[in-house]
Amino acid sequence: MSNPTELIPIGIDLGSLHARVAIGNLNHKNIPADGLVDTLPLPNIISNAQGSRYTLALVGTDKANEEANGNAEETRHIFGEAARRALAREKKPPISKDPSSMVRELVRSSSSVEKVDDSAEKASKAAAFFSHLTELACDASSAHPSKLRTVVSVPVASTPEEQAGIVETVKRGIDEALAARQPAKEAKSKKKKKGAAEEEPSVMAVITDPAAVCIAHGLTEIEHPGIVDLAGSKDETTSSWKNALVIDWGASGLTATHFSRASGNSTLLNIVRNVNDSSCSGSAIISALAKHCASMFERKSRVSGVLDSKKACHRLEMACESAVRTLSRAPTVTVAVDGLFEGIDMNVPISRPRFDMLISGIMRKAETLLQTFAGGEGVDFDVVLLAGNVCDMPSASTLIRTKLFPNANAGRGDVPPDEAVAIGCARHAASILSCDTHSKHGGKRTDEAGLGPASTKVKTCPLTIGICRIENAKVNGDVEEVISKSSVPLIEIGEPLPANITRKITYSNGDDSWLSDSYIAIVQVQGGAAKKNKVIGKVEGIVLENKSFEITVELSSAGKLAVSVNGGPSATL
Image 1 (cartoon, rainbow, N blue to C red):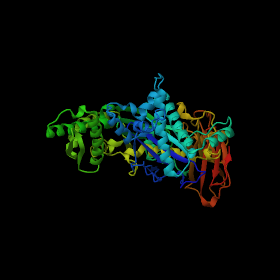
Image 2 (cartoon, rainbow, N blue to C red):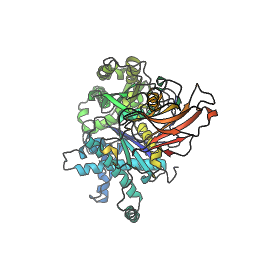
Image 3 (cartoon, helix red, strand yellow):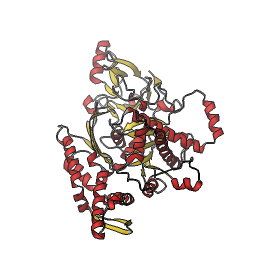
Image 4 (cartoon, rainbow, N blue to C red):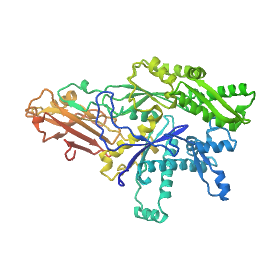
């Protein structure tokens, strides 16, 4: 059970087919690890009422309940498989042919610049779904909706309007969950008490799907070994990866994103190239299996027109989705549907080799796309990360890991591909909440810009802040040269703000008198807003016998720089 006063970090992955929710972990510090090894505990994925770790992102209306109550004005929304079954009862097209009731499509339509007549209704449906996810998060964390702080993911190709739309929809969903738990009188009194004061945002950030995957595997947490030797060269402090490829292969298509880094110690991820192919989608794989099963069923039962029946299509797609998941972990599966068509049961056995043959054309298309990254760019990827349901399939993982990128690091082995985005969002939410610049102001944002995702502008560090050992005899001109040659960057130019860095500082060539004729300085390095190298602060009170100390440097989004040594009080520079 969570502390009643503690804010809860939540990550939401709104996929084109399924949605997942994860709860972040605030009970640890971001301690860098050595190399590409991240050992921080992972967030917990929340299960829904049916015990599943994912929820079909589909919204429907419970018309049977409306007819029973005789109240057409009161709408009750249903979600997931219940909504799919309602579509089947109403003989509407399956979601593969008509995705208009999927939450991502609802958000996209309601946030479109060209508003349509039913935009308000679509926004209401999408908000109801996020309210449902909020209730799941509250039940799992034993927290009140007002304590949830959310990070949500979006596709790389999403427009600013779509990003702003999903932020508003998630906020509205959380507000609806809050209103359902809070009496009307109490809500009014709290609103009056706050007055004109701006409420703390419940949605802290929006990040792209591939960036969330990188965060899930700790690529932004392990950029530095954590120990800085001031007697070593700058090359010894560089990171262990420079290029990473994120392959997100889900229901809507195959997306490959090439990330690079601005510098060796930077946690800022730069998108070099992003390619998407919807013809290789997970939905296409399900359709291929459904067509095969329908063909086998028609041949055996001597019937025709199975795929023309909307109800049969719904049931067949559901069975095929379950079969594909089973084939990811078992050599054979039987696709079974009772009374599929004209009261006849269907039982079609599928082996993994047979399934691989059915989707061989889709795999060839995917291989052609990924080969442009494997050899066409002349880049050796240090890390290749997987995301999406399709990457769970043995044929897909073998194609990527064994055939195309055999030498690339695979990231953390305990991050399931289908849950990587939700885990990354939750880790990012926990990282924001654990930052001192957030907690010092009662968990409220101090920047005037408000919530970043509504616009595409993100505050970044305008210069490089580092640490350096400088001899006392050095004069101004010499100091600039020493900083240029010997300083070790702590916060790089271009780093997203707020930034919080902790490093252990040592001097391998020193004895007990290693600081008798010199001092440790916090410096700014030329570049960006810095016109020249200069000292901006000195570190004092170091116990020389220890030959090492721990330093924490924190730069807020308002530009305030604070430094503390060995866990002591912070000094603002």
